[in-house]
Length: 208
Image 1 (cartoon, rainbow, N blue to C red):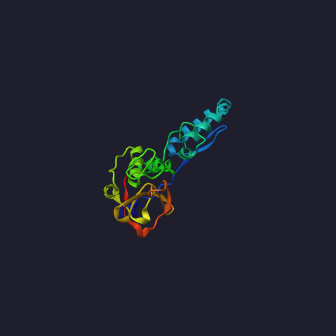
Image 2 (cartoon, rainbow, N blue to C red; image 1 turned 90 degrees about the horizontal axis):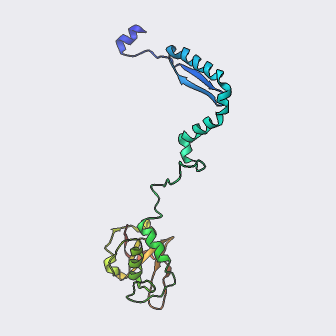
């Protein structure tokens, strides 16, 4: 083996060694050691045995500490003070578009009035402008101007709160999900949901 190692650069395998430390009332733990540490491990086990009664009295506390610091425990909601306040970085319920959409939903049933922008009556672009203002974003007043805000979004990627421009740019609604829009449609009607005709879309915009 020595000749082979010298000519090939290979090192002969070294067998891994482990010793077991037994904590009374808690369990056994294998620790990697080499031959020089075997006596120390034996001494530790002897000391643990000598103080077995004291250790057993605190066994529950030791196990609780092990559980609390285990990586998987971070996913367990039952452990206090570890998961409290933690949020999913990919959660979007509080995004600008969702806040705006929720604001628009709160105006369901409000009467359409041409040129109105809230808080009681709306035309199509007035509803959109008012809703996004509740989310802290100022949008231009008309549907034509709103057709240029944000960035374009494909029909199959629409999300609630996205703007849907229709009627050659003369009408704007908010996408509501499930193939529907939320809009202030026209005189004599109220803020309501409607089915979205993909062929009616001039452009769709994602504001935020």
